[in-house]
Structure formats: C-alpha cells, structure tokens
Image 1 (cartoon, rainbow, N blue to C red):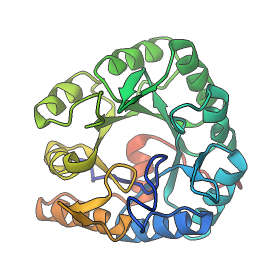
Image 2 (spheres, helix red, strand yellow):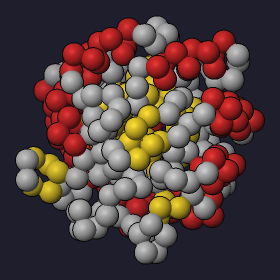
Image 3 (cartoon, helix red, strand yellow):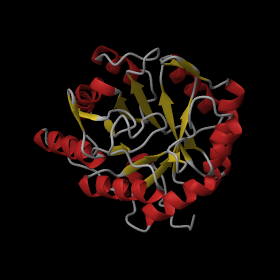
Image 4 (cartoon, helix red, strand yellow):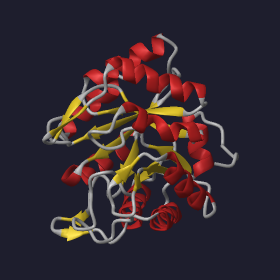
Length: 276
C-alpha cells in the first residue's frame, strides 16, 4: 500500500461557531488550525474562506491571504474548494483557481444537499475543468453520488482532466451518497485503476469509513467541515485532534503516513513554490 494521505478540511462553508466554538474563521485562525493539523500528520489542506462575520466567500484575495499565511508556516498541499457554498454562482466558485494552487476540488454532478441543491451542470463542470487545466491545477474529483464517477470518466476521454486523479468520496450528506460501508468497495471498483481515492465521511460516518479506507489502501479526509464531534455528544477540540486519531489508527494497522512531498509524488503533482 502507498502511505496514507490525510486531508484536513478545517472549516467548510456551513459550520458555525455556534455549532462548535473551536471553528476557525479568520485568516489567522484558519492558518494556525491548518498548521496544527499539519504537525499532527495532515499533508493536504482543503480550504474554504469566510468573511469577518463568518459567512462563506470565494473572494480570491481572501484565499490568497489564507494561503500565504499557511505557506509561511508549512509546506502542506493547498487544495482550494470550488464548491464554495450552496447558492453561489459558477463565476464566484471558480475564482480561487486563478491563484494557481496545487489542487482544487471538481464536483462532477448535481445532488441534493440537505434541504438545498448543490448545482453542477455539465457545461459548468467542463468550464471548471478547463480553468484548472489552464492554470495547471490538479483537480480532485468530488463524488457525492455514483453518477459523478461516470462524468469523470467522460472528462478524461475528452482530455479535460488527467487520466490519473484523486477521487474524494463524500459519503453521508443527507440527500446524496449514503455513508454505509457496503458502498465503498463499489465506488472504488468504478474508478480507473491508476487513480487514487479518499473518503470523507460526514458526521457519524467519518470514523468508520476512515478506518475502512485505511484498511483498503485508500486515503482519509477529516475536519470540522465534515464532522464537529470527536465522539457522540462530545465536540472536537480541534482539527488536529481528529487528524491525530487517524494517525494513531493507521499506525496500529502498520500504515505509514505520507508527508506533503510524498503525497505530491503519489498524486503526481509538482510542488508549487511560486508566490500567491
């Protein structure tokens, strides 16, 4: 097995400090939270941004400040979100890609998202893929439902995304792909054999799916975006605490942890040393 790549999704777009007071909001808070998660063993930082009042934003200048503050502390792989928040238009959502981060998420379909709809039309998906290609940004395919894998295959055939990418199976969002473990082997069987994959279990599905992924040779995403609890009814103290648990479980299963440069090699991306 390759070494385990741990992604920290430290903030997201929906969680508030009312949900968990430890949620990072400001640029400094986000950078420090990512740095602590990096020290704990994370090699990828999945980034969202917030305004001072806590509402989500895709303003690339806010992203630029966050990324620069993180880069001043460590060399973790930066992966920006192009999902943004439900209701944002495609132009807003794609804006941070122009900063040329090493990675960006690419959701390849539309799905229900709790009471809302996460809209991704095929024309918009292809525009996003082209923008990532033009800026030399490696896409991570976010899969919220089975059909999104087929769309990714078609994007590969059209040459819009590389033939080797990382798939992120987001499991447990109400209205989308269920978080049941029986679905994970099927999802893995449908992606190209040269591709890598990660599991992001939502809420109570985070830990059992992470354990399963470790055993199957996949990668793991944890963080406040996906789960604000450490155990039932007990709020997590930090994103680093969630990362530390995954590291501990992986080591008990003789699975080594990838550092950022090792993760870059596994993903097939070059280190970005340019200024943001």
